[in-house]
Image 1 (cartoon, helix red, strand yellow):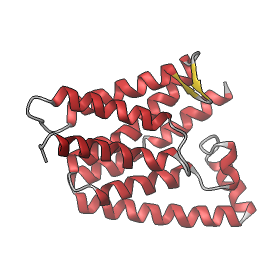
Image 2 (image 1 turned 45 degrees about the vertical axis):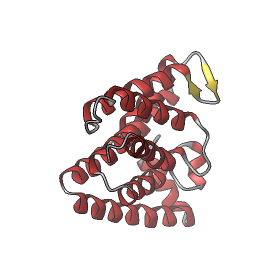
Image 3 (image 1 turned 45 degrees about the horizontal axis):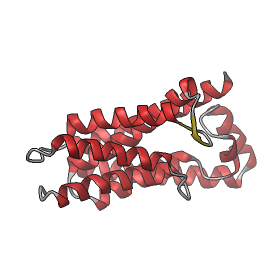
Image 4 (image 1 turned 90 degrees about the horizontal axis):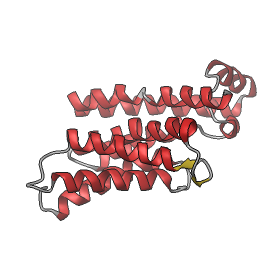
Amino acid sequence: MELVVSEIKRKGFHLLTLVYISLYWYNQRAGKLFLAGLLLLAFIGEMLRLRNQKFNLWILRLLNGVHRPEESRRLSGLLWTLSGSLLTMLIYPHPRIVLVGLLFISLGDSAAALVGIHFGRIKIYDEKTLAGSLSCFLVCWIIALSLLPPTDGRYFLVATLSALFATIVEIIPWPLNDNFWLPILSTGSIYLLYKIFGVL
């Protein structure tokens, strides 16, 4: 039960990404600047936390359950999420495609974790479950179908392939942190599909 509560707290915290995603959608420059400032504050906080044991313990108690046990002595997933999101905004020039890629990590990754904990009897490997991965695909697919730009008759195919690739990225055990890679690679795959089909 404690594991479930902790994961809900983590993914609830994860949904705060919707704040800078929304700001980016309405004003790309403001969204990038806001996220850069947030990343700087998070980085300073992480450095202080990891160098000062008392401050570290205070933060861990304050955000009880948000940090994974192994993150008590290393950089948290929050910093990687912010870093990956900012790089995604800076690398790719199409705001709507960036929006979809960022929502994949905000909603798709959260769905994978929460559904996986409650219904994940069939394991793919480690903590990754079939139920979690299917829910990630479904959420990403709905996001892609709802928000991706028109593709001259290939809309369904592009949305399906985008959601599938995002799910694969979520499953793979990437170096550093999957929160860093998911928005970058998912957005990149969408952008590549649009280039292949000659839409961009």
